[in-house]
Image (tube, rainbow, N blue to C red; front, side, top):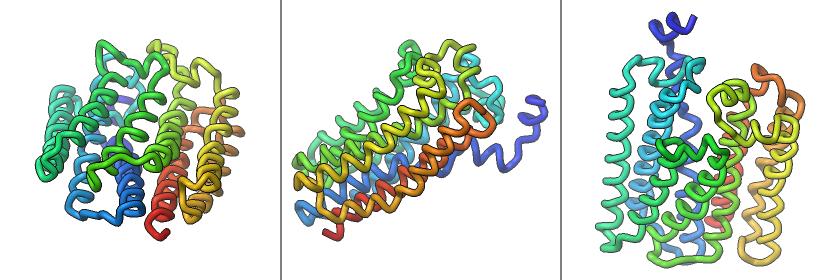
Amino acid sequence: MTTKLISYPNKKLWMAAIKPPMYSVAIMPIWVGTAVAYAENKNFSSIIFLTFISAAILILAWENISNDVFDSETGIDKNKHHSLVNLTGNKLLVYWLGNLCLGLGLLGILAISWWQQDLTVIEIISLCCVLGYIYQGPPFRLGYKGLGEILCFFAFGPLACSAAYYSQTQTWSISSLVASIVVGVATSLILFCSHFHQVKDDLIAGKLSPIVRLGTERGSHVLIFSTSSIYVITSLFVVLGFFPIWTLLSWVSLPFAVKLCRHVQQNHNQPDKVSNCKFIAVAVHFWCCLLFGLGFVIN
């Protein structure tokens, strides 16, 4: 069956491999960091913003592609028909395609640093890339030790948001740092949800994901707490004056959050049914962060 799928890949498998919805993960930290910069300084460079977005998408493509390569080496993806390595049958080609994306993405960030005559943004994004590599790359493979969500939080939260803010202002902001917590938690939820349906494969490969450690039932409770925290944090910092009241627009994404938590709670131990929960988490992330950033812009 696997051989047939690899020999005759179809559009659905390729779309699953490329993961178009997942690229909102790259866009939203830049959007929120830029939105906070605009709210506080009325600074906005469309060239820097669009260059940063493009570079972030390319860097995330590198991470996704290289993760397929690294996972192919541990055998964890042997049943993953939409792995790029399995689809192409050419691990070396996939590896260098990922490196090409990384190189082009870093060129975009270098361009921003050159325009600003300041290396700060490229230094921050380079650190993000390091975190992205040690997540799955040998000899570290920290994702196999259950640390992926922590790395994800810092890379896509405080680091990426701060870099986006700095790219517009060349200064720092407490509000931007606090706002990055919302983005970081929302992003980590996606990775957390991706583990529910693959506990068996993770155990075989020796990957101690949070769901392997917690079990699917306790994991579903952690998901409820973590998802709720996004809205609690936003409301708290509106009250404290760090966020404008318009950031409460992010609560419009609450129906997606409720859907996610109910779906996982009901199907946490049924891999076939729960496998789509990460895409619901993507919807939570997209709408929450989009509206959260909009709240800063329209303030």
